Length: 148
Image (cartoon, rainbow, N blue to C red; front, side):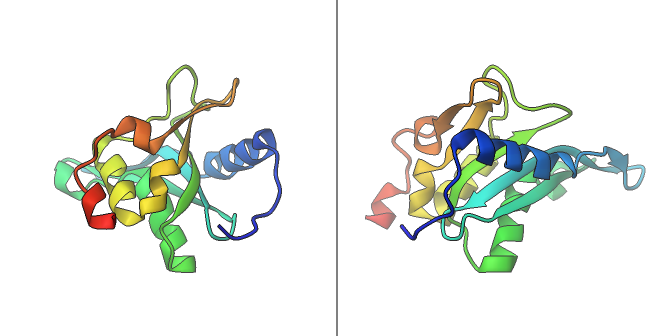
């Protein structure tokens, strides 16, 4: 792993929270589409940079994009990289008591995007800085053999 900027965990989580919080401003894009009511930030495992995203959801679930994947896609656009070190996601306030968990589609996306993402820290309680690793949310993942 490359040398990353040194941050203590509290500083980096606060930075990620503040960056994502700027994206939170729920709005109706049209009578069918809502946006900015869930926000996220990811930290690149390659550069240590923070990227943000917001959800966009329509009346048909097929067009929904979660904030977590939008943040990762912003990172990909800027770095050509989908390897995430840390992630935070929330609505109107920081995650607390097992909050901020990515949905199944996001979990699967991150597992498929990079083998290293299995060790991505996901913040579940901002106050205590409690995290879980993605691999703990998807034990015995079906795609492991393709990486190995």
